[in-house]
Image 1 (cartoon, rainbow, N blue to C red):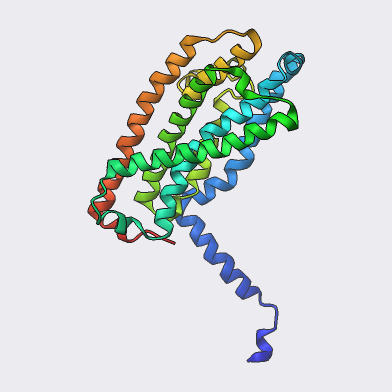
Image 2: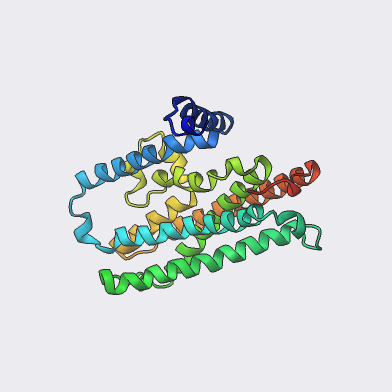
Length: 270
């Protein structure tokens, strides 16, 4: 028996592979994730290439536009991830049941997730913006007060996505946790971070304009290139964020109510 164990076994290799194929078959987010990353990168850089082909002087006109785009995009990403990761930490440690036998209310949980997301985002983005000053000689704080409007609109949009993602993971289990990484990048090519909405195909432009981030990044470029703040973009971003944050809170609380009725709060975990 011991001698047989050292032999190379195609059968055992196939058995392990088959186990993971079964996992993939039972969890569509795992399959989506495999296709997702290459596709999003291809679309994003394809649109960037189209924009730069016809705007070769863009970088020379405003060297800080791309850096600003990167830093402000991270506000949205960290805002969303700050909620999703904090919530999933409670799920990984099987702590949700303990939390909700206390007097903690679901809406108080939501408020604490928003607070932790804000703290994590300020720490992460604050450090990156300070490093950019000596490394690239670019200070995003030179934007001035409009930077506050950009930051608030992006982090609120991140909160809305984070609450929806957390609700989905709570309802459908840890097999759906990859949505926390996939969701925000799925809309990245539509957010006009590095190029204007006009670069997108005409059928995609209405979808882009329905995202608060698109208004923020269009406003950012207009401010950096033409030194004017487009108030309309900020107003649209704020109104859309009120709508999306309300939807995010409603979905999270709805999924929480369903999970509590089905006893899922005591079953989640690693």
